[in-house]
Length: 215
Image (cartoon, rainbow, N blue to C red; front, side, top):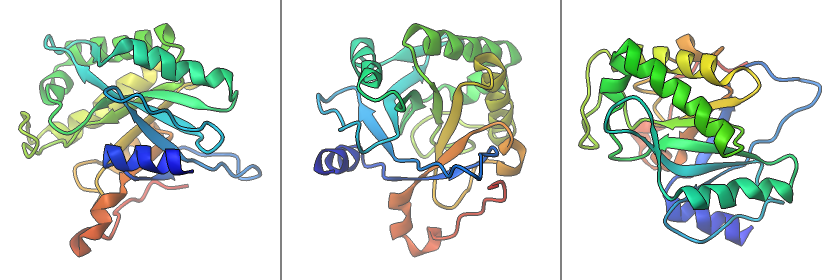
């Protein structure tokens, strides 16, 4: 457990995961997500995690594809599934200061090509899905471009990615504790679960999650 905890702390992203799409109530599913970075060598003990989100991928400079930090390490992380057949590995696209989401999501052609490239990445690296970590729609706080239409376009983006990767793959996202920036009601049937950046809970103003899509 120490290895897993130190890895998460190093990422500064402690996540609480909330299910959105329906799950089998007869078989409750535990979700323990580790965000594994591209710039370290540490790997979690697969006995103690259910999902690994590899950090990070990014929107390409042409707005129509996915660029992966340290692709060989992603292959190494994906190979961990050999030791745990139940482990799921996803590529997390975004992170603080990772931009070009706004331009990509606003353009139908860019958005669909990006979604198709997500599907390519999932197949090429033997992944179980995609995690979108756009920080944050409508916000320029991370030094990225933003638009008032970002929240609406985020919904379109998630729908396009779901169509591209299919229903058998996972589609998740990371967002703030307040539930701001995302129209959860619009995506509740599209995403599998939501990773809440739990370090936000240290701020008393951000202790309520405005989320109506949980089932």
